Amino acid sequence: MVLKYKLSIQKFCETYQVEKHFVIRFVEANLIELTRDGNEEYISEDQVPKLEKMVRLHRDLDINEEGLEAIAHLLNRIEGMNKELVYLRNRLNLYEE
Image 1 (cartoon, one colour):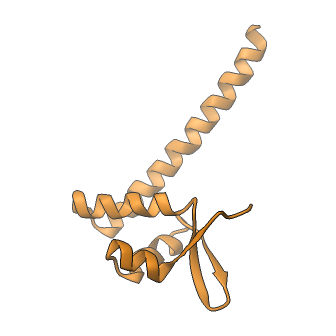
Image 2: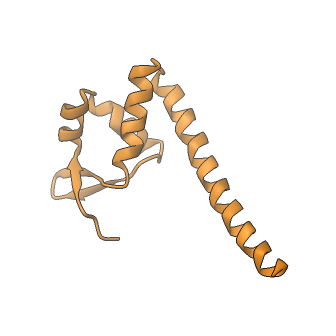
């Protein structure tokens, strides 16, 4: 996987005005992945939108970190089920034609 950009945890936290533990909590829950370059940890470009969504939910709807974890897990399950649905539809189309 080639990364177009990466964002340091510190820069993300400064930009979105969140504590580092906010990001680390999602890492520990295996909801996002970090890359390491030397001593610095970075968020890859495909992970940033997930974190941005969690920040918005936290701020706009006042959802606590435990609730955000639950929401993130459910969103991941929905995404997986949507991919499976597309796969199954494609397979079904093969047999219908």
